[in-house]
Length: 153
Image 1 (cartoon, rainbow, N blue to C red):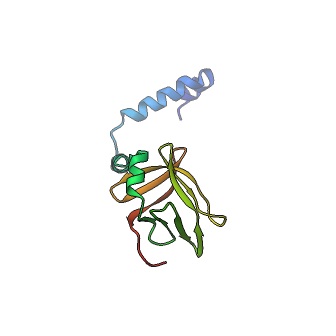
Image 2 (cartoon, one colour):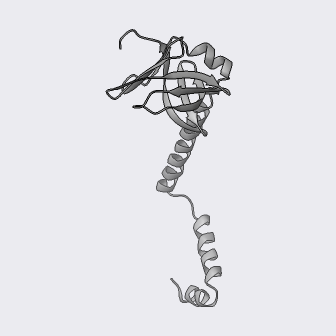
Image 3 (cartoon, rainbow, N blue to C red):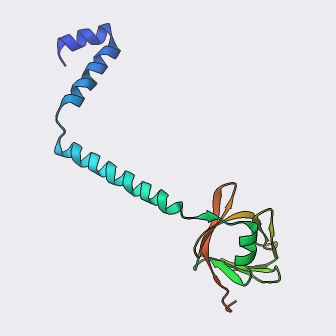
């Protein structure tokens, strides 16, 4: 750093910093700098496309929930599945536990009581085809596939 800049720094620290930043932006971009900007651009575009894909999910109305869930199961295909019987009884299987309770549509939400062993509550239902998200207070709680109920218990 030159004596001139040091004198300037002593007199006015902020002004010196501004001059150094201005000089940095007037230099031609290096290959490394171009690579960093390219990587940042690609990452931003990937994030934008992910957000756009997430926007395909649409909130179901109470009528749509009542039409789609009876006789179906919601599952992550690995850890859990909830079978929604036509009579309002859900059979819940998760991580080695079973539960039987009641399900209903109330105020445009899917409300599930899975019994004493498993959690329950009321959820907004968001769907993109057979992909379903159950959300509480705009936060996703469960994500799975809604499909015809299998006979395997």
